[in-house]
Length: 441
Ligand code: IFM
Image 1 (cartoon, rainbow, N blue to C red):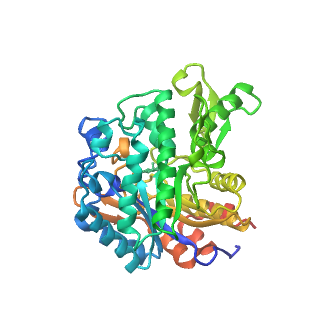
Image 2 (spheres, helix red, strand yellow):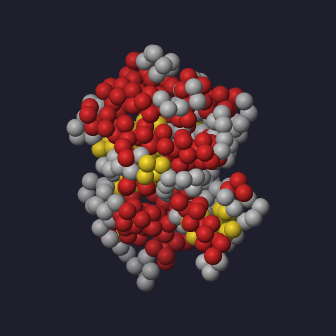
Image 3 (cartoon, helix red, strand yellow):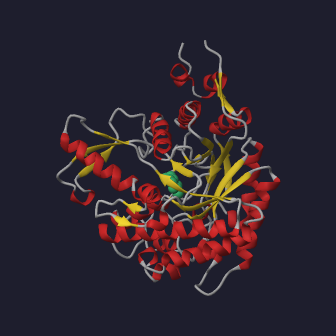
């Protein structure tokens, strides 16, 4: 049996990622709380993981004790700026304490400034549809960065602007007042302007800052590669879902199925690219789906499915994602800002982790500039419209008692982080079913 270790470069960041609304609890002043109380989600966030009550301390202990040297979390706009004219200095102080907490544990923080939630006052004035949105976001970002810059220099402006926009303004799953492709196009353009304004503002405040955003990148394949209609649908969906932000940041023009928009301010506004990778979609032409621009997105029946079939385990896709990013932006540092699977029983997670990290290692060995990997997530947390039905944590959370339940993947990920690599022994111990794939003879 082969024995080997796939090592990563010195200084590689190994962490997990979380988001304010999903872990803090009692975020009563944002649009998601309102959405939950009006029956749009499977359960409510409630106390979530009680990080606002202080449980971040024990969870950061767990992360540090298991070898993680980084953590990505988000700050909650609705807490920091509860009304357009007020700032909550206590809230900022709590985030400073969390950042100090990470530093004291030897962990590098990455702070996300917008992760799906908006203050109610912002939502009520039509949120990102409004022309003032970029300016208001910039004001918030300036306040946060001034307050937190002592402890953080790695900033993620916006998490998954494509998912925020399409799940809300097109699919109707996230809280929005209006729907439609034209509204979505406007929202994406404003998010880009907000991102660009934040990028410049952060650099003005902190010279050493590294600023980027997190793109949910979906590789896609045509159902039948010989079918021109499937291929056409694949290209429309691929560009529609993935390309708005990348095209604007590359060339100052946001590509959209509803027409292009010139956003010269966005050109070049990234010091790194964050990649959130989960799976690959197959696309077929489907005349019955005008809402989805006649493209059906699905996973083949013989996929290696997660518990709720939300994710198909397709590790090559993370390599393709990194390759795409490197080709699009040569030499730009990359972080895997999210990658994970919902799997309450931890049946798939160990192989999902090992296989994806193996692909990241392959990419690093092609000299693709990947600087870190943040697993989604540290603990189970509130999964938006799907509530508590999906469990993404290395640690489980009993929402009633707040008890943490250690899943076997904790030990696998700890061994990877501590070794700064993935070894044949680890794979043999935690996911022998993929041993031959990862260590072929
Ligand atoms: O939980 C989410 C996260 O908020 C954004 N990226 C995908 C994760 C899993 O669905």
